[in-house]
Image (cartoon, rainbow, N blue to C red; front, side):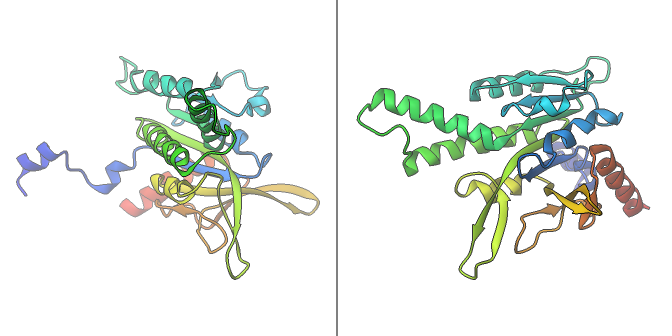
Length: 254
């Protein structure tokens, strides 16, 4: 391939495509997803941080006066925030003003989206039950969620998106944990991210320890395309994950 064609196509090696962390983290309420995301403010390469708070979970970060938070209570407010962020370029550095953006959570965002879809449907068809979406409404919400999640993932910054966890039992009575999204989205949305992790707590020596699982199994949906984080990380923070990834990348390139 000629160098001119490479330039025209924007060809680059895979390593250059991994400029930013994009992470989907899911878990039970209280597992520490918001707290984990807030720790992005504690590293120079991942701060400043902006949290788009959809489910009202930033109370856990109330002691942090150095984190910016937007309270979004409609899908349109989330879209508006994305459009403003996409255009927010620091003239001194040529990069986005926020180095990390966290959407907390996509589970709640889909609930808001479905509520808006059903409200509009009921306005036009009062005879329909506003509490029972049809496959058509679920399909429409799926289109909206894919568009929003891809939009945030593709921002020129680190992206963290949280979700609650849901479980499904198969014919062999094996329970698998997924990000809590409806229908095909629970397996499609994880495919958008380089890193998908299940965050949970365990009791060890009468102390509650947070752990993140990065290896997918029959029971847990997870993955790590960087291959730098191992199976688990104990007491995770964004700075700890960032340093592990940078160290792994440096080792691979030497």
